[in-house]
Image: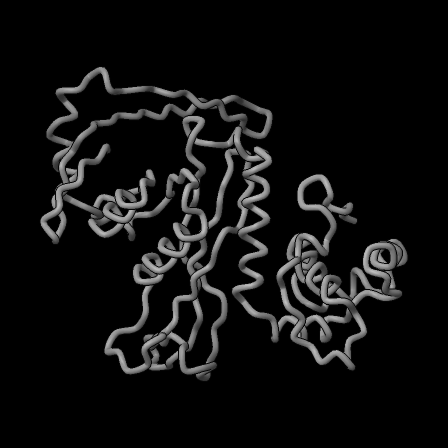
Length: 302
């Protein structure tokens, strides 16, 4: 079981400070902090569902003893109790808990050794699916028509996570991809959500030196301009069909840059029988010009 997080955040009630209790006072059995901790613990331990709380935590002597010591309760909240409380929470208040938690790790220099070039924190942004329904879940659902003519309704999200070279990913911020304007001709999309998310990220962490990690979907003038305006760096993985003019410029200048090349050999052990070496070749060019549709010229490295 996790120890009290005093080394970084203080007591659990300090970690979850700022989240208001939406429940009816006369029906409260468990303090709010115990519900918030249980919800977090469910994901940290990958219990899979609220049923995991019942199967793994409730009627578990050591777990109940911890809850009694930390929260003054004799039992661990039931999954249905957890659901009732979380349905009524203010999302922005919970989001602030997440931001404040990562901010604490940064301020205490826990993540300093994972900065790029000793300066920039690596923030990966990508979309992921969350919920899919056969019938409309709410007015803000996105819709997709399958080959068989069936329409599905779904709620994807865009995630921003601070990542480290040793495999950790710290959740920073989430932006839902959903139809805000119900009268609009076009659905919301990942790029629109990206613009909203980066605006929120800059507002919440205005002085944090960030290097965005992105895929080719975001490669374009608006992204380059956002990073210029916010003084962020970026690393974007491009496919052959992404920014074809940039690929052609790179192919034209790289023969003239023989010194801008590095070979790296990686050792791979294959089931203990033999050792294989994989060679990776890195080549780069700097200050390649990319004019966008707004006639702004961006200078990129490839």
